[in-house]
Length: 504
Image (cartoon, rainbow, N blue to C red; front, side, top):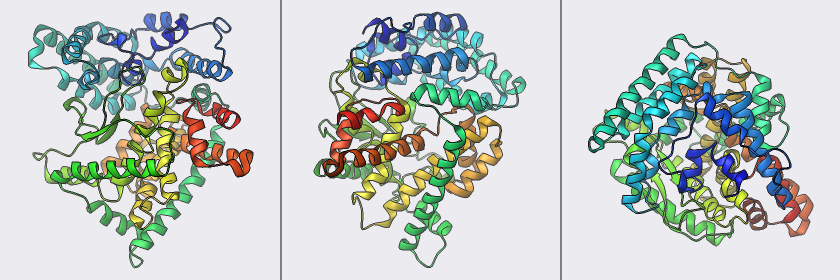
């Protein structure tokens, strides 16, 4: 890497290691102490120090630098958000088979041995954690304990002791931290604007979210009428959630759907690359909190199978917990989830990332584009006829999208102070059909993940780019042409997507 990208990767070590495949960071923890972050920020290239020859790449890198300065400098989120530190400690990345087992084991051991120092840095940094954020992130922090193995010996004992100190600190923050998690309107707008290289007016974004939510509710109601015209939508949604495979059938249905979406996407030529192998199986033990996720072969790794992780509940769980978990894999939801995670969603995107034509595009992976693309793929597939004869797919797309769009509304409300956690949870219940603990968990996520509206925002921007491309290209417009042009940009800031129209 050149020095400019190296400085950026030093500020995103977990992402660089796992999503980008820069395994020189294996066994390394990021220095997230206040002094360490200040030193890392000082290494970012000053304006004009090293200009990339491609103007788009220059703008992409500049946006990443601006975002880092806002996130770690102006907002100092590493001082208020424990998840920065949880991700820094996470060892699950070494479970993925990107290298020989002995090599990954050595890296894991080095990483575990660094836990005590990393926890010291975390406790030093986390001096501004709001009480609701501490409470909401304690579960994720506790989960790190499961990554320590009996065979880790003295290093495991030291890591466990350090981990308990981190939990004690977060529990203290939960008791004594500020009551409000709100960033404030200007700070949230600044965070979004910097990362996506575009000016953001939260009022306009809130209106767009409201409009989209109303559209999706109508879409769900229409799909429910097609499924059962004599029943109200809420009752139909509950019945759809109850129609799911058993524990022994989840993986089989996910594998069948994976084969189907890969074949369907290739036949419709919706993405530029349809190669590679995508396997289906449960997540590694350390990540079985995730019901469904994509672990792709990263751009800087040798090609290997990617994994669509679908994790059924444990047989030993209480019946009610098993049923709630299995409802996520209903025959209404699982097809949309598979389109999102596999094709033309994340897996298809990963195949393009490996061919991105510059180091900037292979390295600087924007989350709003990544999730926006996969979310866009769900309804785009519906428009192109995927499961056209089964209204359950349309219902599944609408239900998944309603959760995402309420996240956008909740993030704006929570961080401008216009909405409480309880009010956000009520909106997830009324508009996204989530109940009780699930609705409250989504609302609390908004306290520590202020950009979790990125799924809907990214989808909406991609739709706008599609409209502009159709107008600019006229008779030459096609979805394969647009998608190839967009994916050639890697995972860019949303504000730079018009490059695809200019160069496509």
